[in-house]
Image (cartoon, rainbow, N blue to C red; front, side, top):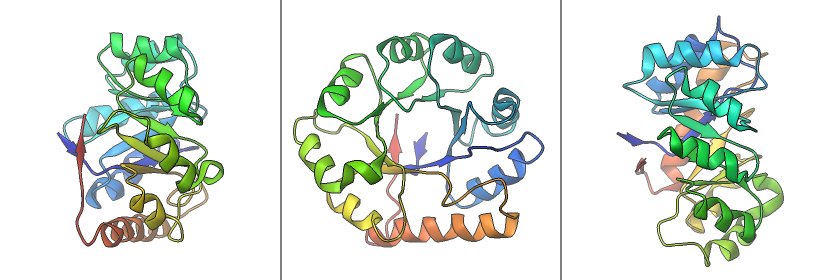
Length: 210
């Protein structure tokens, strides 16, 4: 399956609302969905997403900090593990279960450690502190075709510069979802981000695969 490289981060989502939000996301091309584990009852939300969308989207958990959490997510049938940090044990446990591993990194050392541990892609976090130019410098020492996502503070004013430095994709959280938003507002924001991504990629919806 190919994926639009925009990860929807649904921090704070609840199980009673998660499918309504996912409908909006998938209708607009977002087919990578992450429920952070510091959300209310996250495994229930992930299970609901897996039950309905496992053939249409890459579903998984974010803020995964230890191997027990990897196993808990695996037991839902989800296939994605995203972390805010580079944890060798978490990455290896993820790959043991044949799931997609996207650990967070901030430095060249963390990026290379993550890849050597088996990561499928890198999450540069927080992107607002790293910045596109620092990412560009780090990317020069990474293996060719390494998939890299900028996460944290991505918006209409900085997306183009990241794309100019060959970022693979983005993780987007509060700019498309927070629990206080109405479905109407979420829909408008999701549509805007899809259009923004398309415009910054010269009107092409570039996709990736794992």
